[in-house]
Amino acid sequence: MAIEAPVSKFRKNNILIYILICIVFAAWFGYDGYCNKKFEQEHSSADGTPDSTLVFNKKSPPFFIGAAVLFGAYLLIIRKKKITADENELVLCNGKKIPYNSIQKIDKTHFEKKDFFVITYKDENSKEINRKISGRKYDNIKAVLNEIVAKIS
Image (cartoon, rainbow, N blue to C red; front, top):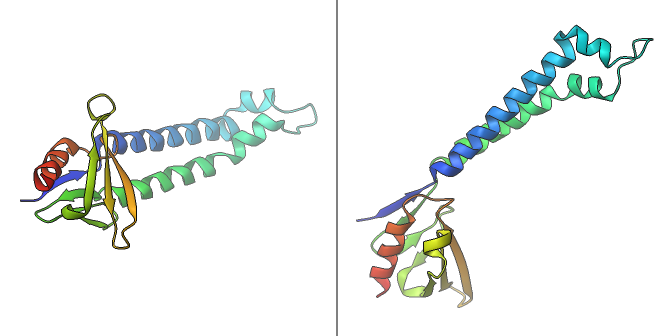
């Protein structure tokens, strides 16, 4: 039976917060730059030349909307990623497969306090690689860790 660790709700919620912040700033600066006549008068000289604050408020909203779209695209990309501990190997989110017999050690010293562990394994070229797996990026990593420990023991 394969155990999966999907992308964490912490990470997804943070990206949603970034999207919301970008939209709020775009609306706020767009309102001040185009709709708020008092703000336009305060930030213009006597001859009608806008100062840097008014110029920023008029030019920044499209960039904030663009950033929100990019964050949304990133969220769509990562929402299906997961780490899977199946019968024979650990499958990372990028498709990299780590057979259990190639795992040299698991460092769990920071798991209780900082919610991550480090796997040291040898790749096909016998090169030793360390891979950090964090609970901030993936949910259900405790079950994945238990499965890995059970398989290599």
